[in-house]
Length: 129
Image 1 (cartoon, helix red, strand yellow):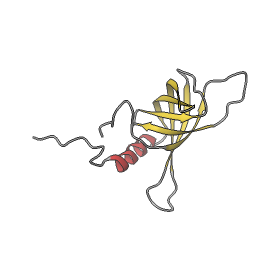
Image 2 (cartoon, helix red, strand yellow):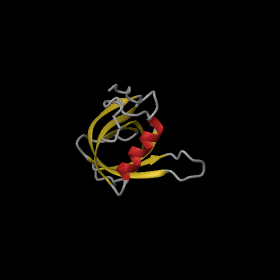
Image 3 (cartoon, rainbow, N blue to C red):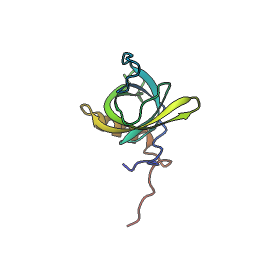
Image 4 (cartoon, one colour):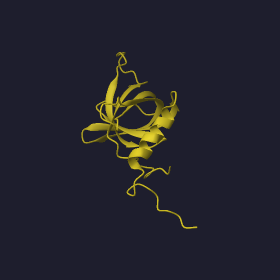
């Protein structure tokens, strides 16, 4: 599957829970919540109220909504590395590169992106032979 706008990713708006490796003032590490605004199979842009320090390890749970009524959402566990955080609309937007998926997480993510975005709007034009 070709990546859609590799700089921006797919417009998912899926929920994300994360722990980051940035301790401040000896505070306890807590679970933060955010929204995946740009998602590819290689990384994510997380919009949240928490500033994620640059070049830090992040443990994430990407919550993929179901396409079927009554089915549970998929939870994909990912280890990532923060690249950049900027302010956007009074919140923090952080670009994270994926480093490791637990279990079959990468396949689950790829399948769900394909199911939702393999439409003429996002698909590459067919090549002529």
